[in-house]
Length: 409
Ligand code: MN
Image (cartoon, rainbow, N blue to C red):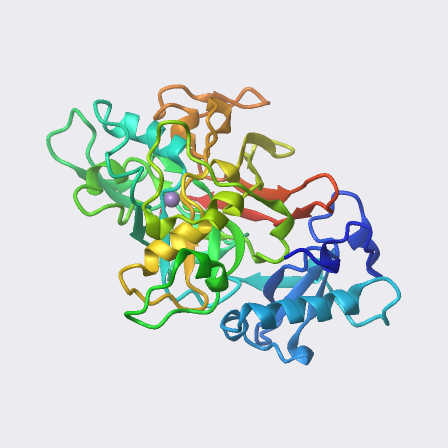
């Protein structure tokens, strides 16, 4: 699975790709859809290298979804060609500085499903919404998810309007319709589906990787005052569908290969049912990806890190999400997006949402300048970041996933 494209000594003729701490060294090669800023040109597929973009339209790649539908072998072949073209000593090609580009959602997302694989988040939120019954009994058996809204998925940098909605305070007898006062973020990864499966034809857990294309950052913005009033009995609805922000870059599973880790269950927890279990899953089903949340309020000169976590805390693997989703015969399609759910860690400071960091808004967090926050205020910029690193390999990053809250209409 590992090959010469993971060699940490490999360097690029693009200087910025060799810089310490860059998200996009030669070993990463993340994909995006971009065009030159200020133009109405059609979106093109590009690959990030250092602070530049290589346009793939001369490479037989003019549509991201079509690329996603190609086999894993074809994707690996493209990665090898890109690596050869961008490595030190290869002839220089025309590139576009990322600073002169604008980006869009990296593919056409047909369907968007959000899972709930962060058990520490599920426990913490369950305790707030249902103190007597925090973790529902199905959680350790079935990968929980809900069908989200793909039309309101936006790329990093797109402002987010504070939604209005029905809110019923606990002591009120009737709900009111008003701007949400509890806008929150959710720290998630988004899994982009590669080749799909035909309707009525599920696949086995060890075939799941064939259907996975890559990962990006995903912020599942949530209105915490609308959510508790609407979520029973059919799950989240308008508390989530007002916006979901994704990073412009898709980091391929090929690039993430060095950072796979064993998938284990805590002592005493049930093991997954056989259709979600295999020796390969146990050996290398998980991913070690560091996650960060950053906040910049209008009063701050620079953003402040709010929390850190890791994708290793997920209770279900990417392959289990894919396999379970298709297990009833549901057809996945290239470009479908599967959110992991909020990937909080076990410690309080590893929380992937303000709901957890403030214990349901009861304990405000104090920021560097002395300001406090229970939930996000107008003008606040919330950013997600991620990277993978391991001795013997080059660190790779995911780019930015940022959004600023704007006042309700
Ligand atoms: Mn979510």
